[in-house]
Length: 415
Image (cartoon, rainbow, N blue to C red; front, side):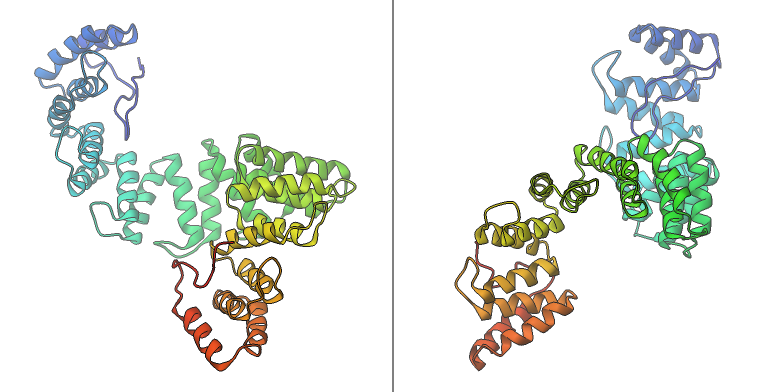
């Protein structure tokens, strides 16, 4: 007979096999919410040395269900259980050392317990150990070790580890890039219900990585993932439907998926929905709807939406022309180091649109945009240089040259 307790963090309560009559009675007491009785019975078995009872008693102390929460007592019983090679107790101790609950906070000790659990073949222990190596918690960061432990967890059948192995193989982190193997692991995770794995399978089919490119299969996998709430899958599906079909039905479905993701908070979906309305994806262009969605995306900081919306105000498309609003929006995107926004902002300074004409400021902005990879900005910058005196050019070059990614933008006065 198997029943279930609550779970805490790594894994506190898991399926409980019946080792003795008292453990069965303790489980029954827990099921009917008689937590003091359950604790009494677990304590009796724990004091007689039963490792499983020691672990479950610790979990009751940590939960605070039978009495006020007592992390110190929880850690005491977890340690006695862990000393008898109980992996769940090791995971609980790792979690407590990581947070400093009931024991001194000690990331290296947390790693030590995870290593012991992983050495016993515990998939969750291997997975959490992989995360420690990937993030440099308690051990030096080591992508190769992170992949090794993640693979161990994946081979043991842990769904999130299978998804993670696929991602590392796809990115070539800690191992050689192998899209075909990534696909294989995504399929394993998908069979266990991983929605994200289904979205990644769709992506590999869409771009022909590790498999032959197949838009129809990509659409099918995206639909499965999107139907289960994956926002990236919904956006990719919408994009494929819009670009791959001229049928009104497909385009309406695309807008529905964009709207689904947008209403769930995706700034990218809001922006793409705005573009779809601007371009008349299912009929006539709708500039009012387009602007509304651009505004929504810009309000949550999407730089591309800021640029598109700035263009709407700059040209007065469906709205009164406003250089001031365009400047604000370009600046908002420029502060995120978007090269297109920086260059467009520089052009507004050069043309005196909403600000006093200022070729020096335009030069600085264009030079930074060029540094970030904009070829158009490099050409504009050279044109601005011809408008400056030697001293103005020297100062502008100095200001632009002093800028480093992540630093505030020089000369960029508030609009």
